[in-house]
Image 1 (spheres, helix red, strand yellow):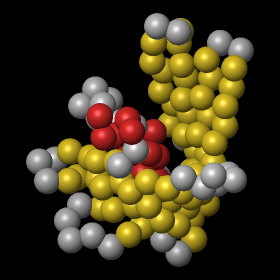
Image 2 (image 1 turned 90 degrees about the vertical axis):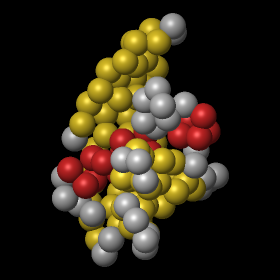
Image 3 (image 1 turned 45 degrees about the vertical axis):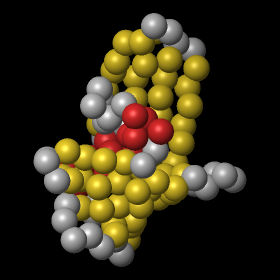
Image 4 (image 1 turned 180 degrees about the vertical axis):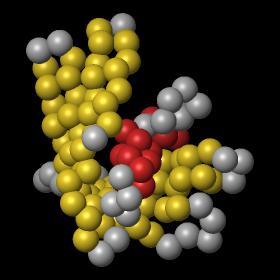
Length: 111
């Protein structure tokens, strides 16, 4: 489990990432964010994808909408990339939650 805290204009946000299980190149990840009295919990399914360079993942949110993003770790130039809004426009500030999930899954040797 990884926990990070950051300060925003709206207040302090604490994010914890828990990698639940791994099975055949996939793992379930739970992301919990707390800001003041509000807590949100999202569950994602990470799947390893073939890649010519770097380590690629597909990140799929486990809810009714089922949004999906592609994450590439160690892209050319030593950077990570994700095709979500944050990863596209603000990844130079801080990695998005999808990149952080993939890194944590690799850290825990779940993928």
